[in-house]
Structure formats: structure tokens, C-alpha cells
Image 1 (cartoon, one colour):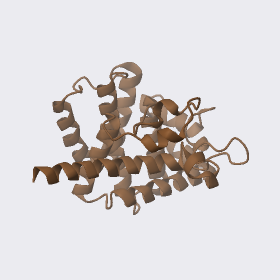
Image 2 (cartoon, rainbow, N blue to C red):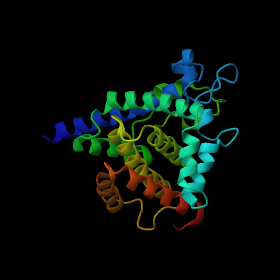
Image 3 (tube, one colour):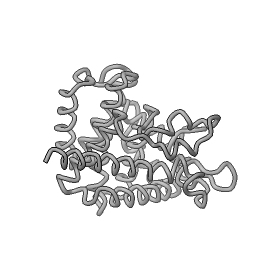
Length: 255
């Protein structure tokens, strides 16, 4: 029985890694795995394809919808302004096209987000991602040249940039502002719960950013995050509130 449990855990770890690999294959590593997209699901190809994320997330500039979210989270801007920015037609189209990809990949590796077993499974995947405890991405690492800026992280399935946790929330909240409680609401709520727990796990285990004082790199915190994650898994608004609080702690050291 113990051997079967070990095999199941290893199978789950491989599936979690495959899920993150596929998301990355469409986005940051599009040039290797999906050159036909010309970087459409990322920041474009630097030529004729501008990229969908260019309208949502910061890179060479800070899009208005991202600025509105940060101001909302910090209490210096209104939630209505963020909603208005998210619903601008070209922004909304970009948000929902990316959301469609995220949803398809989620369904492939996890299933029905309203199922408590799927919720626990997904939250575990985000915890493993946040704590950098997934199997290495050896195949991808071998494809990346030593002088490629992605080389330092190509061999791991994790979110390296601390701001990207909040960028993910910006996209999820924008999709919610556009689509509301549609057929994908349960999936978006669960993914927000994953951010609300994966982000502090990442900050606590790596020790590189501030998070809640009760979070430490230990088993007690792991259990607490799992318990909170399951409580938040079907509550989009509670997740959004918590992620905004985590952003303020990152910025100021307190809520």
C-alpha cells in the first residue's frame, strides 16, 4: 500500500509539472513549442504579433488595467476603475482569449473545479509550484542556450518573479469583471485560491518577499495554507480580498 501511495504522489507531481510545462509552452517558451503562435499568448514576437499579454500585464510599459488593479489593491483607486479598464473592448478580448487557453489547459490536467477533490488537487499543485518542489524541467532546460535570459529558470517548474503571482490575479479578476458568474466561474475562483495560497508559500519558503507573519517555511504553514485554500476555493471575492492584502504586505510590510 505504501508503494502505491508513493507511485500516486509521483504521478501527481508529474501531472502538475506537465500542466505548468504546457502553460509555459504557450507563453514564455512559445518560440520553442508553439512557433506558429508568434508569441500571441505572450508579449508577441517583436514584429507583426503584439501579443495578448501586452494589453494586460507589465513589461515594456504598465497597461492601464494593471495600474488600476494595483491602485485598487493599495486603496488609492476605485474598484470601478479597474472594471472599466478591463471591459475596454480590445483589453477584454485579450483577457478572454487568454482565459480560454488557461481554462482548456486546466480542464485537461485537473477536471471539474467545483469538485472538492479537484480543488485540493489543484491547491497542492500551486503549493508545489510555490515551494519549488516539483520535478525538474530537464527536457526544456536542455533546449535553452546558455546565453538565453530564460536559462536560469528553464529547468524548474515555478513562478520566479514575485510580481507574476499578482499579475495572474490581475488577469483572473479582469476575466471575472468581464464574464461574471459564467460556466467558468468555479475554475476562476479556484485559481484565485491557488494564488492566495501559492504566493505566500513562495514568499515564505524562499524568504525573498514579505508575507503574513504567521507564514513560515514549515509543515504548520503548509497545513494552514491548505485549510485556508479549501475554504477560499469557491469564494472568488474572498480570494480577491486576500490577494490584495498580500500585495499590500509585499509593498508596505503590513495590510
